[in-house]
Image 1 (cartoon, rainbow, N blue to C red):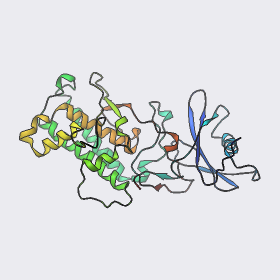
Image 2 (image 1 turned 180 degrees about the vertical axis):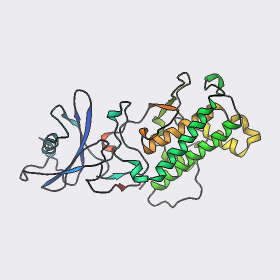
Image 3 (image 1 turned 90 degrees about the vertical axis):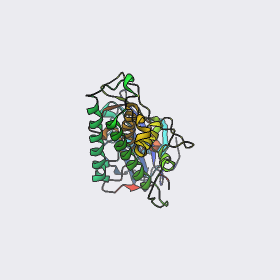
Image 4 (image 1 turned 60 degrees about the vertical axis):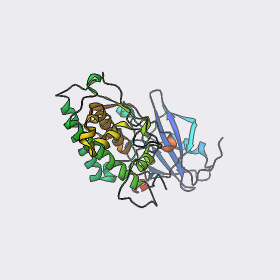
Length: 315
């Protein structure tokens, strides 16, 4: 028997069936109450009144209570080795940083934070802006094929879209940074020395995508080489954007299809890492690889009727 006291801590455990698994959270709020939650897309938790208030309030007891809930049937069994203490408290979340579960099977997708209800118009505007940019890139494919042979093709429309896409990426970077620093004052101007701080919290190096309708084009990993020693030069598509924006005549040939597609892939990844992979209604990419967050890192919804609580990542 496990005698770890639970009052004051939030624990998570994986329940497994023959087909798939679910993550459950639990914590004793008092001797008479326990908060229960199955992490899913319903965005809420519930509190259960305990009948046997004289019993031992330990992990074994909590799992017994959780397993008896109608949300879980007898086909699920607890994986006791998976029990962990949650990194965040109930209802805490890092603003504009997704911490869910992605699966190409939609029914196994989890995103406990609903971005539209928390961010409203800011969320909608970012998706509308991206949708317009992806459609503009797709329109180029009517004039030349996105193939390896055309990677070095350059032109005015490439340059225009590269500038627009990277400007949108910078906008996301800026506001994710502002939301996740508790004490640092807002800056008038940010650079890649600031933006690279988001590499770890957004797990940017772990995302890769491919062109949805052009499987012959290589898989895109726009952030894989990003590093602090060369925060601009280490992402060539962004370095190209800076060059063609400030020096069109001297650097025009860097407005290539390859840099344009890398930047579009970077925008897709930033939106996924910020809002969740299923947020995008129109995109030219499919996700190939994505981060797998440990259950201790996944957000726990507030108790029903409560509010989410922002916790800046860099606090």
